[in-house]
Length: 224
Image (tube, rainbow, N blue to C red):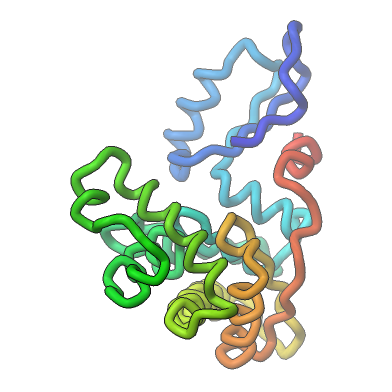
């Protein structure tokens, strides 16, 4: 959740909140009502939309987010939005930290090399999704020198590129470049991001990959 400006002892003039679980108008209305009294004006929007605003300073482009889960959001030049992914660990999240950790656990050789815990232990322990997702760090760090880890990370990068292509389809008519950016812990890894760029170039030659323009907290302050 991003909150801007910072909360102080007195009511604020304006408060922007980026949160999960606020995709519908009703959900946003309930969230605003729960924050009533903290500020004279409250704006609530999905954290994914706030990350998109940060990446493109409110302009058009395709954002791919990969952390514990994965999702993409595109905003066309006409302001139209399209989302892909974000189905959660049971139905999707391809290319995410959870997906990478789960695939690593299913590879006995890689699991032994990286000294991963027992899948049975994780499946029946507390917070299984979070704990499986945490294993992605080992895979990402090993990828430059481990062929099995590298293959898995390249596959994850390809899945994330597919999300970008799916969201962009039909939103960007013409021949000009389409800005693409990223957010989330998985996308901070240079090896994965390098292969994401390669996969994106093969699938979507018009993509112009660039880093986010600002932090979501700053974007929240600018949106009030």
